[in-house]
Length: 236
Image 1 (cartoon, rainbow, N blue to C red):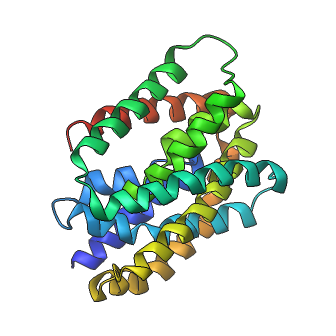
Image 2: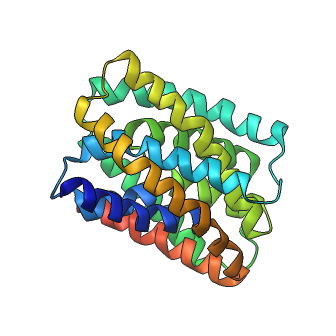
Image 3: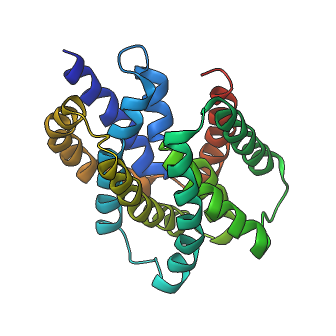
């Protein structure tokens, strides 16, 4: 019964992610930490995040340019190495507070900043690095990544697709770290094998919902989700 519930919740939360480019794992954690411990859900989230990225990119216009995403991922890799190191060696309470603070500030900036929301080149690289570290530490990088993408790209599909490309590259990176440390348990593998095919089939069709959301509504939803997800992390 717990696997059925996990699959249903993951379908809903990662459908939201494939439409808006973020928040699947945050919503999954919010909904299911009473049933599974948070660390198990973070490790499990590799599978649906990769499915979202692969399906979203495969069923969308080709908007991602390799030199641009490669530059972002170079800095994300540096953050990811630091994040994996801290994942196994440092208490996470302080980092959760720092993550919540950064995401909340990003949300406040997106929601309340007027007009053109451009970032400096240096700030963009800082967000790339923090996104990689956050992905390795918490399985969550969407709020930071989408803050960066919304400021860098003018249309919703390009912003979302760069975010998905970012997730597609960073999730196998943390997955490799988990494999080296023997972090995948039999329970997590079972969760992935049972829920994965159903989630993949649903995401294949739900990706089309992204193209039905108008540009203004897309940016409003993403901005408010980033703000609310940052605030919610303070209470988790």
